[in-house]
Length: 155
Image 1 (cartoon, rainbow, N blue to C red):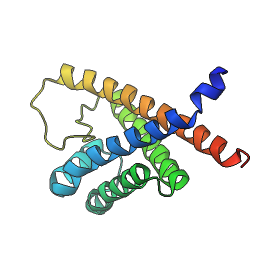
Image 2: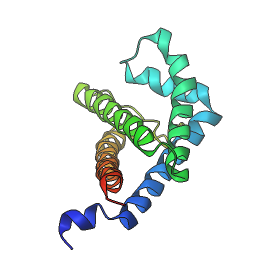
Image 3: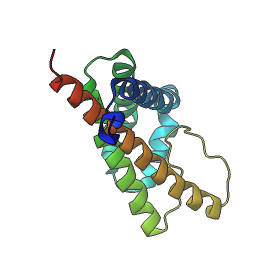
């Protein structure tokens, strides 16, 4: 079995699909439960116009939750994965912009409550958040190739 075959094997693809779905569900739940705290975190990014912050805080968690559930259940895999990949790229860019600005933020990715950490710790956390999101984007890429290969397989 070649490396390409191993990386797109259905066994791995299904597990990546479930893990990615679970990660998005886990990230969505605190935001669904506490939209005001999530809205505050979106506002702190200083990227989105203030008029869009509240609607984003209400809609984005449900999009994450539904896309995650779709992957866990194996429904609309390509669409859910594409949506997740787009969101991950947006998250990576948004955190990177704030890191470059020196604007210390709490990403709001899995927890919508600030932990009371120092600025140096929060800057380090931002770098880890970017690495984590890049890792999730790589999982999304594996899923894309794995699903594509399954759909193209004869029989």
